[in-house]
Amino acid sequence: MKPGRVYFSHGKESGPWGIKITALAKIATAKGFRVESVDYTDLPVPDARAARLVSHCGTENDGPVILVGSSMGGYVATVAAAVVRPAGLFLMAPAFYLPDYAVQDPKPVSTRTVIVHGVNDKVIPMDHSIRFARHHRATLFLVNGDHALIDQLPLLEELFNLFLDSP
Image (cartoon, rainbow, N blue to C red):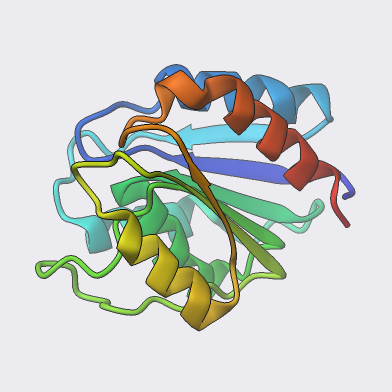
């Protein structure tokens, strides 16, 4: 894929430069992508976070946009995709189908969507990602990990690297 911009969206209780985002940002930067990790620590409402992401993406046309999100950030990236129309969505344990979220079935408006979800996730049931992947024909990787997926960081890095290399 031609390098463009990668926007990272962190989860509810994490920050913009956590372990996963920092590791994946290094991969994107090495491939020539511009990287931004949006800070949502002041916004508890996921749909307000999606609006912030849309405003950060702007209207620059300097290559493809990739949205990456973890947990609530996965929901945020997917909701924002309806406006941003990214070339790809890379989602880790995305927070789909939660009762207090405004959009119950966000549409992954992108060329391709990849989801990685831990089978031992006690925060967001893996069944939510299975349902989403089945309904929206997303690629789904179920891995032996928990919600944070930190113990699967080498695999996340490998999958993200392949994701960025795909056309």
